[in-house]
Image 1 (cartoon, rainbow, N blue to C red):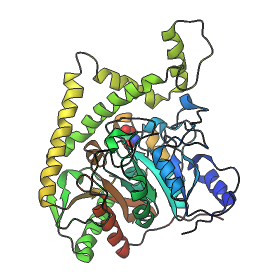
Image 2 (image 1 turned 90 degrees about the horizontal axis):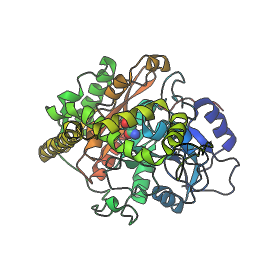
Image 3 (image 1 turned 135 degrees about the vertical axis):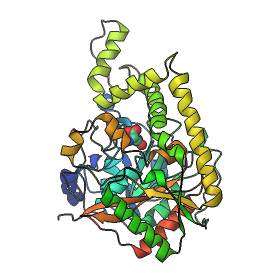
Image 4 (image 1 turned 180 degrees about the vertical axis):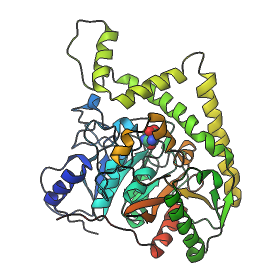
Length: 442
Ligand code: GLN
């Protein structure tokens, strides 16, 4: 496995698609086993780490995040940092302070978010592994929109050491690539306990040979509100899974999934609002230059200037949800919804090997259409990726059809720690279904 790549070609591609917000400047000498990229919220020694935010402009970490370190040790060459929604807040990567990445199949459309740049890098570069991060679907969604494979491991499988937090009880580091073969090789590399992230220390060992037999459940709730052409593509894919892979497909009811969206946005923004409190223009992030004023005025000045609109919205929403008087009504209620969804999945997994659904209810939208969407309309588009994320369950998105030239994704969810079965499924799927590769210029 030797990766050669032409940096000038990559720079030209990046001008067209803006996958990277910072990348190698000079062609490295020698060869590496594979190339990889890191989402901009993963700390890296050689590049800035800004998590898509102006408030982290100029931050150069003196260390690598654990997954980055492990990939380098495995012989990977880090090409650069991939563009993302600020701190992971978004579904289309339109909330980045460093330009909006453009879809590899159609530059007038979004790449998905928040790991949009990672999905573009995976689509454009052969043999490339993109490290992505998902809190509520940020690996599955861009994988679906950009026609690549994206795996989101079980919460706690991959160390979060060196990751800039969005929601600590939800964040997971995973991989995107053109097909599942590189993911199969590299998931074991980035997985495993790390004493610097205690949540990674109690995991059962990753067993890539372990499969799950039995029927696959398709929840009825996951088909409501899906665009008709996307639904057709998903239904055709499910028929192939049944006819060619010999898996029985059963339609089931999972009524609690409907509540994943409100519960997620309460929990995620609550955690995000406390995480962002550290960027006050002092110890973390950029500093202001007007020191002769009250602390509150100083730090709100820096935050007003450097946080984007969506980050501010989430700070307000999250702070509200955890305020005395509202905590029971929103935060605690959302926690109990989360438990109900965990239990519902557990009872489904007693009878079924996995849960399948479309990954996103639509193909990658046009930027013109995104402009007309209200924030809550955008949050609603996450309804299929939020349930497995809220419950910490591993999931994979594979391309399963095309509407015109735009890819459609199929998402498969298995019980905690059963990533092996996801990879096995994707491998079998790829034997019978050919993925389209975007046309790239010279
Ligand atoms: N779209 C979701 C959000 O905005 C999920 C993003 C993510 O996983 N980082 O929170």
